[in-house]
Image (cartoon, rainbow over all chains, first blue to last red; front, side, top):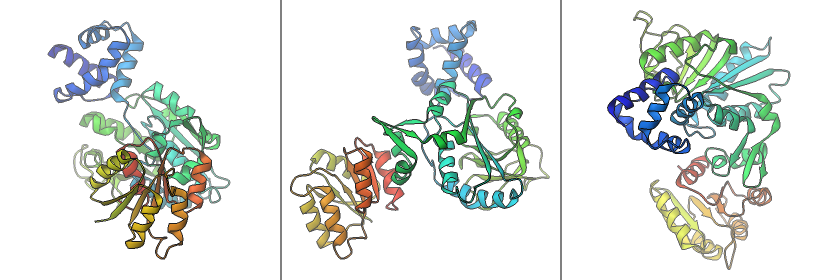
Length: 285
Length: 121
């Protein structure tokens, strides 16, 4: 692949997904896109880049974006965000929404569904407290293939052993051969959709909680600020945004401030650096 | 440094588990059946036990029942690690006092995830 072809691929990915790929990630491009080229009968990544440049093959374009943006995930990933969900976010929101009894949660970049299903399990554990509430989890991802998989709620033996306590596996999953399917009741709590964060998502409605973890890290500062500002516009005034702890120092918008618990939890509202220009750092860790 | 007893009749599994857990800064002892494991536990209770189910002389299930009846035998965190991957075996193990359950085959992420779950890491 020539430098010009690599530059084309990098621009293509930035335009389509916001993903920023530098020369130092050439190995990743080769590792992820090599199999795509092979599947499509293309002899090399040069041929793949040429096919994309012709612009006629929309399916190939989608496959390339999906291959580069699909990341591994697991249940209750990182632990702390889910503890913050049950110990900080839910108590506040259940008190604040006691009259309307509605709660809307968005798992942006949900991959194969482990994050929204983890949230659904935590909510199911509070079934009695949430009796009479309308709780909805919207889960979106750029990659249509993984969204379809997530809807099925069917996970391999390896997947259900990463982060998922055995008691929750027994409680919420049924064994189907060597795989495990999450209960219909939990599947019904989650509404999956394919969605590109770079496009308008205002139609999703207003959310009380947004989990958007390990995504912003791939965007440049301008894209990150744009996405964060539009997420803020889709959130309730007292809503919570959970980002990855490694992403928080670069959460470059004044629309959120770090929650005292830190660890990547942001609260909607004027940031501490409000006198600073529009792109200001919110240090969350 | 926490002490983990790896109980499995396969020397390969013991070696792999040892490598993973030593990488997590745990001290490892090994036993190839439930009876040897019980003798080691009577000498010094480990903090954690990675336990196979099917073994000669004394299997993992019988070992667990004996362990939990020993003085101080309720302290070690027991993580089953077995090819018995069905709901009935998992349920039996938890009722007998297992804390977590690994379905073979496993990798290092699964072992560390389960050990973290029971507070050993």
